[in-house]
Image (cartoon, rainbow, N blue to C red; front, side, top):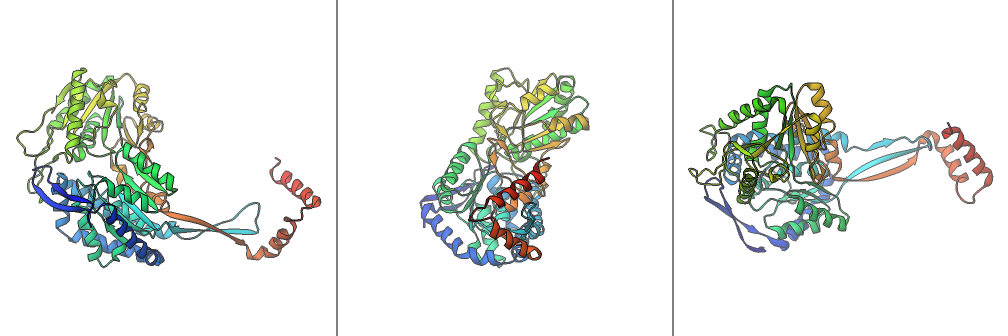
Length: 501
């Protein structure tokens, strides 16, 4: 069942044609959602430990399959170190947390009221039904199959549509779900272009979307029209602030890593750096030295030759980075290192590039780059750094380096959903805590108990508290029709007694 011509998948580091996958179109998505609806009731009826066991089987199948890493490296152009040490490790930890936390956060909860103390309310959390996950191209596991984990453990069936740029890893993980002995209709992968994603949003009971702000707005608007919940993680323009008194070597090392992790193609990566004037010269020297030392090459799926950076995954992002680089240089920025395409390599390679003398007149400091380019701007003090950090329509992530007290205080005032103090990026691996954006960076969260519960519907069932049932029945007779002025007088006195002080 195909919506249009097949999708060709290419290795961005070499230009090699890897495979073709079908564009299933709307009809293919409709069929997948129908299968999911058929499978969902039996899956929801399983106890949480049984659903967790299915996720554990899936994890083992993934860890035991050598082609997972190879496929991920080839279709994304990233080093095996990041494929295995970031994406697969993250999925493994997320499944571990989901299995242990879901038993606690999904069990019925009893609320005991103050006013109507004769009552007890039991909160029941039930799955939404079928959840659609629409994933991006930059993390074929971390923001694709991994985003199915919480909806699945909460009892939903999931249909995943990965990006047409990097769909092969998701397709493989869909096959491994079945190979692990898990029910086929509960987790499915459909491949397609924009029409398939739009169809998924039209048909499911909840949506997890990761991608651009523009597309995220359309997804959220459609979910709003349908009155179904959605979680969106959209763009980031994450600042890194370096205060006087910071460990400058540690700050430079962290900035080099967070700016160029996954060749800069990460929503939580450092996109702009603000450094206090007093330490700017030394910080820039250290940062440039560390970035120049990075080893960039065509990734080896076996990691036989160590390297730090692979290629850019998506040609459009290479064009964005080059346009921002040209704009910044034309407006006075200085190239500290990098600045050119790697013509000696066959694919989409731009040298990791650091610019000094950046200002907010440059697109580099205002619009998402999502590539191997970062600008450094000097500021007179922490307050200017704070003002500039918050001068953005995005608010996903941030980092502050400096003396602990000053850094913590500044971090508490940055408009971002997640902030690191004297570190970078690793907050994403703390799956016990929610990760979400502010402003145009999205709504809803990943991770934490909040991330599991958002994929459920809440029903509050109120009953009499057994020891107080006679009192409850007396009140039920006296507080309803026909209204009695004597009862109202009692209610009035009780209100003043309880709340009048």
